[in-house]
Length: 94
Image (cartoon, rainbow, N blue to C red; front, side, top):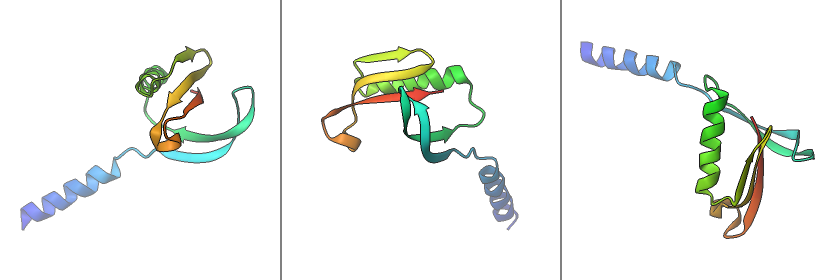
């Protein structure tokens, strides 16, 4: 019985400290104009960590060129879940 109570308290504590990532859709100034964008809030993550992980993800999507200026631009990404085998360009601001 006490193991059940301890386990349930542990699970409640574990879920209460879980990070929440919020995704909102809005129009943002990115890629030279005001475009529809997904705005993602990632808490307790450093900017350098997010930039390096994003660059790595774009390389996984076979981006031809990843420009790391104030906006991250990835050209000719192939994301089959979004657009079959056609390439798309992705811009991100961190």
